[in-house]
Length: 74
Image (cartoon, rainbow, N blue to C red; front, top):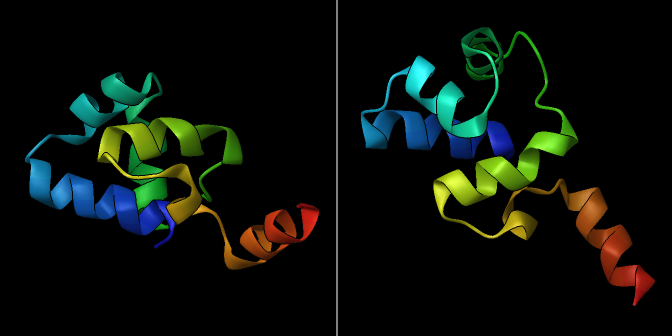
């Protein structure tokens, strides 16, 4: 699951508005809109906050190539 997919799922299931999500993530409403619409990529520094908001593990949001790189670090 990508960060965008997780955020989109949370948006649909929670009933929270984009401004409410923005407030919870401590970002602008336009950022939430741009992320959900695909106009802008979600910056990596927001992944932790999105994972926490969505109630999922951060590792679930990381791109597959990052997961592979982390696994190889061990």
